[in-house]
Length: 392
Ligand SMILES: Cc1cc2nc3c(=O)[nH]c(=O)nc-3n(C[C@H](O)[C@H](O)[C@H](O)COP(=O)(O)O)c2cc1C
Ligand SMILES: C=C(O[C@@H]1CC(C(=O)O)=C[C@@H](OP(=O)(O)O)[C@H]1O)C(=O)O
Image (tube, rainbow, N blue to C red):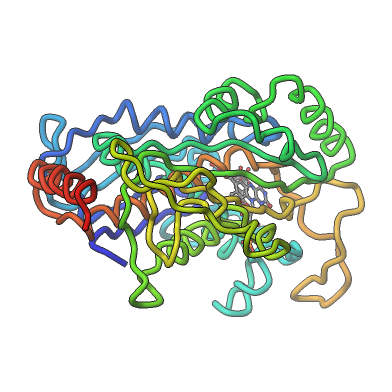
């Protein structure tokens, strides 16, 4: 919506994934080590399949950065697919197919059938290669650039898993401060912030795997240190809550987004639902509760942004009897295709959610404070902080 844009490209089993980011200002310190740490976080999480043992995602910065600082020019990021060398026949860029196998039995819940009809393919691999969430690798790389921008002005983003399948720790989270939740989650294999629950979650995932089943779940993403005034109430597509919801929904398999207490708010009386306003000489305007999740009228209110995202179960099932499907050529009933697959990817999706929130917030910062030279942008932010303190 604002000034920051990115496009990414690449097939899941093609040679590489790339992204071009336009709109990152000049003079921002960027490190590939930071990006690589984020890429490694996305690869972790209990329940992932064989592919994550093959890949060791590392970024190559190909443009827009010199001696560790951004130039204000487009930044190109590339991550190679290690698996590519096992797919050079099936995924050849040119020539005739050597391996004539085709995928003709679409998986319910994946893009196979609808994509095949829409784009006119007989081989559904032509769809699944790009529908695959392998694509989220470069989103995390772009998000890592945005996180470095945000951290330089004190905005921090984190996430953790709240539930997998019907196993939830939502009620138990309340007394653990946000940052602590993320910190503890980092050490848990399932990325849940309650270590005592780790084994229960792993057991559930193991059972699902044994049955050839898959699982979805819920993760929470948050941002702290966000100034008042990002986003706007004046036009539908400038509302920050709407922009965040779109960013989260754009992640493969996400089916629900809540900001703050979300659906829970709809069941409360008004007196119990809204966050009362207080003022203090030191803090300025503040709230003692954060049911709104940091956004009112499409504008940030200075409290942490809290987003909860619901992911459906992974569509590929490894059960002997998979889901009913129909062969697109013979029209005969068929078991849906079985490919190597994750059992659950909620922990990885949470890291992708962080990247998407970072991208939306970096965009909103540049929209409000300018977008060419990071040094001047930061000065404008300092002046703005003084203004907010002295308001009106
Ligand atoms: C991190 C991540 C990993 C995923 N891994 C798999 C997988 O191994 N197998 C699979 O069938 N779907 C997987 N998915 C989900 C599919 O990509 C997704 O369901 C599909 O693209 C259809 O899109 P939709 O669910 O948004 O309709 C994964 C999603 C994410 C976010
Ligand atoms: C490769 C990644 O996730 C993939 C997402 C995915 C899907 O259908 O979305 C299917 C699987 O791919 P493959 O068939 O190669 O095992 C996952 O491994 C990744 O996250 O890097």
